[in-house]
Image (cartoon, one colour):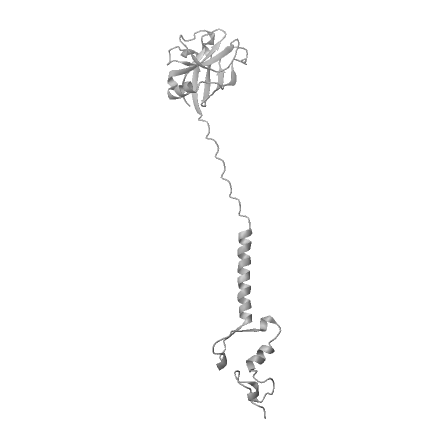
Length: 230
């Protein structure tokens, strides 16, 4: 008949075991615990050891907690060790475009003072003047002139309709620069050194200024037109 298993807190000899006197079942467990650390039990000494009520905590649970802590620390370290992404630089704002204003002048021989009454009275044309803060670009088309007409120079003058005035902005056209074909010509010129204050004044009151082109016959002007906003 098999002997009953000794209680955890009783000496082994009390259950008929003749091994070392005074060794309890718990001592035997400690003496023959498995070699694998993950299967060991962590024995927590407790004041109630004598009564056999000894709280134990599986080492496997402790190992899992330790593994989780190490994994979390590794993730945190990897995040902290990564170089921070460089902030995307803000694009440099483009400079504000220079203010541009376009004005128009209808050129007629009859607008001259005094009006042209000879063969060149048939001349006419259009001038588009584009202003920036420091320049004036002239886009000019002339037509209807006699084949012999030679256009030499052109300017913006100050003066109301019917009033002659002084030159304010040169178109930069020079004698001999252009040649009419069948009494017509189209050309462009730019004055890049115009007075900013004068440009401002013209844009504020275009009707007080006129475009005038001169011919070889009419050196004071052959066609003229007051400026207006295009």
